[in-house]
Image 1 (cartoon, helix red, strand yellow):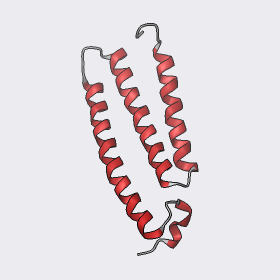
Image 2 (cartoon, helix red, strand yellow; image 1 turned 30 degrees about the vertical axis):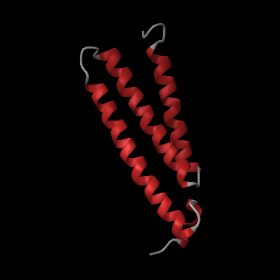
Image 3 (cartoon, one colour; image 1 turned 45 degrees about the vertical axis):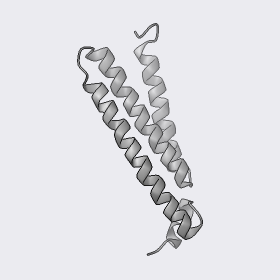
Image 4 (spheres, helix red, strand yellow; image 1 turned 60 degrees about the vertical axis):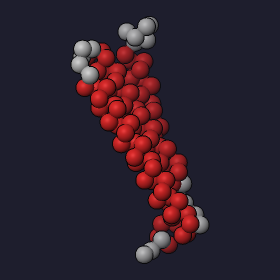
Length: 105
């Protein structure tokens, strides 16, 4: 237990975050909200790595290192995705996924 919080509570919150992110990724039509849903999925996975490392292998830092790696990848992914979204908006004046059939080379 981490100061009165059981592992099941943390895993339930992380699972809810993951499935909210999957729902947002599949349902939303705006590229910004899809990007935020992807970030939510990555954060849920990062929480799982840290919690399971803390409870299963408390003397090893592998879960924390994976979490730091996920945070670095998420930051790079967000920077590249926002740059692409800005270029798509400048060209097509929309960032909705519904109009993807109109976006041709």
